[in-house]
Structure formats: structure tokens, C-alpha cells
Length: 105
Image (cartoon, rainbow, N blue to C red):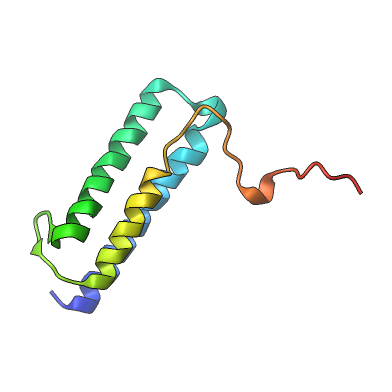
């Protein structure tokens, strides 16, 4: 497989799976939090963390084999951290641009 095509496919799929994880965090935090949803989200994120850790350490990809690319390894390492922080919680998650500052002028 061509290296450029692989990098594009790998990057697009990684981004897609990360956006699903972020959607779960935003949608299932706060009032939408249940134990079942939490277990689904934690299982999903742990599986992706294991995948990206394995790829960043050994260069092995399930069903494809060995692939050595340091840039994609660093991206996978960053995605390990991003998936680790994408777990829903009981508190309502609000992005920084939707928060009220509390200042009255």
C-alpha cells in the first residue's frame, strides 16, 4: 500500500474514532450520564488506547502488519492522551466558549 494513502486513511479513521469519543463525552456527561453509557464509553476508549499504544510502541497494526512511520507514531501517542481525557462524567461538560464568566460590566 502506498505510504501517502495509508497515512491519509489512518489519519481519517483515527480522527473519526476520536470524534465519536468526544461526542460520547459531550452527549453523555451531566444529565445523560448512566452507568451503562459510562461502561460503553470506557470500553471503547480503552480499546482505542490499546490500539494506539501498540502502534506507537511496536509499529504493529492489527490485520495489516508492521508499519514504521515516526509521524504516525507520535500522532497515535497524542491520541492515547486524547482518548484518555474523553470519558464522560457526572458533571455537565461545557466547552470554554459556552461558559458564563460571571463578570458583569
